[in-house]
Length: 163
Ligand SMILES: [Mg+2]
Image (tube, rainbow, N blue to C red; front, side, top):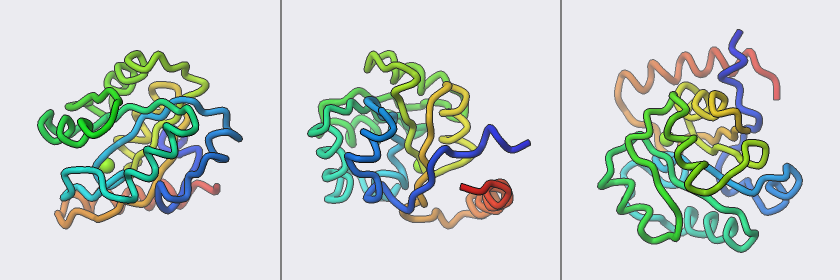
C-alpha cells in the first residue's frame, strides 16, 4: 500500500554512495535534492562533503542536476559552482521538475536515480517519474512542528518496508 513511497536504496548520507554504487546499478544520471541531502538547509554553497560527492560523480562520468522545491535564488546560488542544470520550485512530489531536469541532462529513465531526504516529496516524485530512488537521512532536521509531523508518518511508512 505504501509501495510508491519506498526508496530503492537507503543510506545514511551521500558519503555512502561511491563510484561502485553507480557502476553496479548502471546509473549514469543523478537528480539531486539540495536541502538536507547535499547540505544543511542553512548552508548556501556546497561544503566539503557535497563538493567531494559531486566531484566523484563528474570523475565517473555521471551527469547530475539539482532539483529543489526551494526558491530560485537559493537553488541558483548553490548551483553556480557547478556545471550542472537546476530546477527550482520543482513541485515535488509531482514528477514535473524531475522530468524537466532529466530532459536537460538527456537522461534515460532506466539509468537515472533521484537522491533525496524525504519520502513524501523526493522519493514519491522519483517514483512518479519512473526512476530509481535513494533516500538519505536528513543532514539537519528542521525544528518545526510540521516537519516533525511528516517524519512521524515517514517512520510509519518505512517501518513497513524491509530493505
Ligand atoms: Mg530535502
